[in-house]
Length: 633
Ligand SMILES: [Zn+2]
Image 1: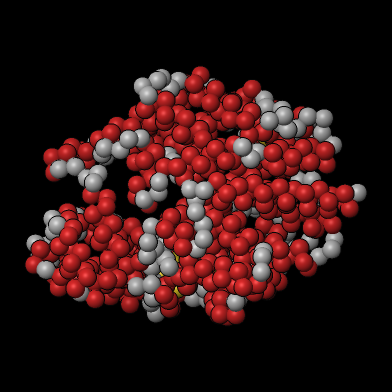
Image 2: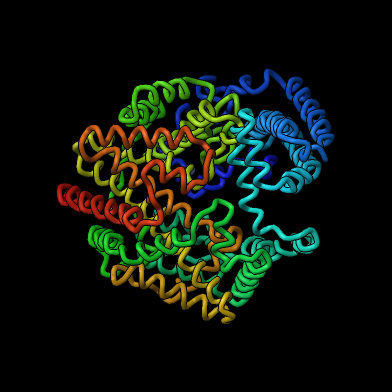
């Protein structure tokens, strides 16, 4: 258990996937000077600390508590009272960690240029590192108490029951912990194990030189990732898009042999670590932390591969509406219709509140209180961090960062992040500290469910076919991005790693072939796949930074699709029961393994039907899109 890292909220990582488009229309207010933005749409940090002096006192307090905690070393075997004392001490430090971490971190994000805040934030990092080292004795010492003894202690000591799940999960994971000599040996490799990622980082960012091309209108553009994606979205000339794609992806292709060598070394490392810890496969090793059975990923991949028909139908519809002879992957970002409709923040806030009415008056009232002022940092300002996220402070509640620019995307971003924030609200008020944090495996269920509620709400509000088409397209595109694409990525990782496990070579040719075959399998004849797209694997940072991570986007999405169906179809009593189960899931924080939590909510990810729900949702949405498109013409 690495409590020190809990506060860095894994949720933050996940949300970076949700694309945030730069301002298309002016944000309101018309200033980028933070001081001129009304206080009620800016964060109020006083709920965390009244001032920096109080934060300094908090820093001193955490150091003192850490020292006191270190003195408990050697005491755990004394009995349940000693275990309880240690866990309670750990909790106190953990709660303080949230406060001392978030206070500078949130302020830094509102103005990343502020060096004084950045320096304070760095001090927190140093304290946390010290804590990690100072508490490294804790789990090994706990595990020296036999599991049966520990279970009896917990049963006999009611005050230990909130810690039951966390304590016993340590024993579960112990199966793959080696003896002291073995652990020491593995720990010596930990720096070295980061080499593939570090090498990838240098090659793909420091050393990469993106080419410039001249467009049909005579303008020259350097194809950096930002310029490249902007060009694909806004350039109506297909020939320009084609040349840009060939040049941009070709840049990676030019050093594909090096990327392949890095990927091979990474897969070899994963296989080495899996074998060293007695896992049958690399996938099993990757899934053990959250206790997820291997068939979840295998079923996800198989069911999605068999369910690509609606994806292909969507792409064919786009091809037709865009009037293209051939539809290429680089054509998928061009909007079919453009709209100048805006969604100012007040309207957006009212819409998201209205959309979740089916979740009940209590949920809505808490949501209303959360957005009432001080907890949502709404607008862009000089130096503010881009994108959007929700960050929890235990005992205080969530803080939500936006860069609302009145677009449809920013409206859905509010719904998404609001879903995370409300998950945090409900979990914090229900769970004790030790189980208050949820895993990313359930986090994106809360966010995507609220997006779905918003979609249905907005569709009810308008009869304009163009607007309805754009709303539906937004949702369909999200399924493409967070479901189909991520499953295809998981499929790639699985195939490449399996080759390594079987002792087969992983070369550029092998990786290119896996990727090209996947494009064929997922897009069929809906897309003309250009040769150079086979190099795409080399430009996916997730493959190199966090292997076996992306499938979680898809499982979250599938869970949310099934929950949404259950809450919105069938007899009233069943819908009501499904809604209660869903709210219980949100309130359960991290009090069990994510698969078990989802199962209690009615989602079984080992079943094909769960994944199939997304395929069916996609199919229904594409059908609705088709109908609206026919009305536009
Ligand atoms: Zn998210």
